[in-house]
Length: 233
Image (cartoon, rainbow, N blue to C red; front, top):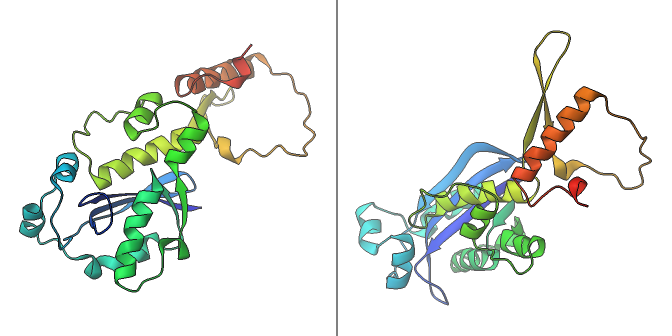
């Protein structure tokens, strides 16, 4: 499964505003691949002062750095995201801005060539009544975002990728000592891939070594969540 975690920065909020930065990181089978797409864009209009205070980008900076207009980068951007599931925090805003840019060029809507997962909606479903901003989720899932003084599309997409993976089960490696040769055996667990519907599962008693490994795994899950369901009384 190919996903692209995406964020944009814009000249402001509302009709007529434009994208000025795009940041994307690629995730395949729940693993960051290291591939990314990052581009500053000349919006051909003034950036609102309030927006500049959030992301720190000015029209002068974009001009000085020869940022291209969106029409110049539209094809390479679409090529990077095409066919992927886009993972976006508050997706309605970013997708709306992207659709407006595509519409100006006579290009089809984002959802015509991508699917979209909104992590803001997902967070509100998982944690009703709790704050669901990216900063709040970083705190909840113990993700370091101390280097994030200003919003930036690529930095925010990298942080969101970590938040999304933790929020949907994480990637956990369990190490067991092998008695025969002393080497470590690595078992990678993907909690989202467990399917138990309509299965009849045998009851198996753990030996001492397996029980210790099981408790270690629960300790690790406890650290990254609000507590494992197996330890609730």
